[in-house]
Image (cartoon, rainbow, N blue to C red; front, side, top):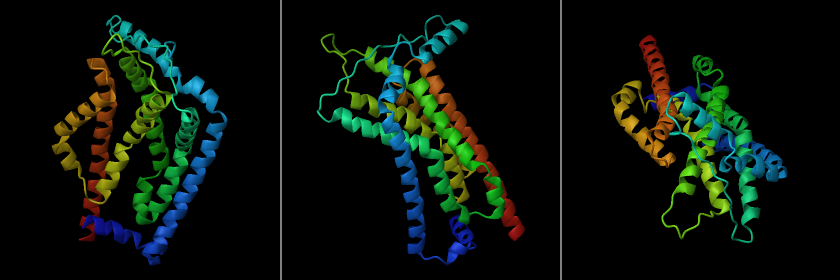
Length: 284
C-alpha cells in the first residue's frame, strides 16, 4: 500500500503524463550527464595520475604515513603502550603484465573521476526522484545532497586513513612460510584500496537506503529496533571482514561508525513512520 502511495505521489507531477518509455528516456539523460561528469573528473585524474599514485595511493604503504603516528600517539595517551602502534611498511609492488600499469592508470582515473563527481552524480539521481516527493517531503529532505556527499567522503577518508593502513600492515606481516616473499601486484593493491575507500564510502550511505526503504514501506523503525542485536552481529562480522587484523581495537574503530550509522537509520525511519502515520490520520 505504501509503495502504491509512493507511486501515486509521482502522478501529481507534470511528468505523470509521461509513459514508461518517456521515464526511461528521462533517466537515460540523467545517466548520460552523470557519465560525462565522471569522464571529466577521470581526465583530470589521468593527467595527474603519476603524482596521485606516488603521493596519495602509495602513502599508506609507507611507514611515514600520518596514520601510523596518530595511532601510536593515541595508544600512548590511553596508557596502552605500543599496543596500537603499527610498524608501517616500505612496500614495493610489481607489474608482471605488459599492459598492467597502463590498464591500472585507467582504473585509477575512472575511480578517481567517480569520487570527484559523486556530489553531481547524486544530484542527477535526486533530480529524477524529486517529482515523486510531496512539498512536505521535499522540505524535510532539504540539504540531502550535502549530507549524502558528506557521508560518502567521510567513508572514503575513513577507509583511506584507517582501514587501509591496517589492511596493509596485516597482509605484509602475515607469513605462511619464510621462503615466501610478499611482492604483490600493483593492480591487486589498487583493487584492495578501492574496496576499502569507495566501498566504505558507499557503505556509509546506509541512512539514505533506510530512508528510501522506510518511505516506500519496506522497513520500519520498529523492525530495525527489533533486530538491533542481529544487526550488531552483522556489523561486527562486516568489521572483521573489512579489517583483517584481529585485535579488539581494530574491530572497535570499524564497528563504532557502522553501528552509529545504523542507529541514525533508526531515527530517520522513526521520523518517517511518524510522518506517514500523521498523514494517514489526517486523510482518514
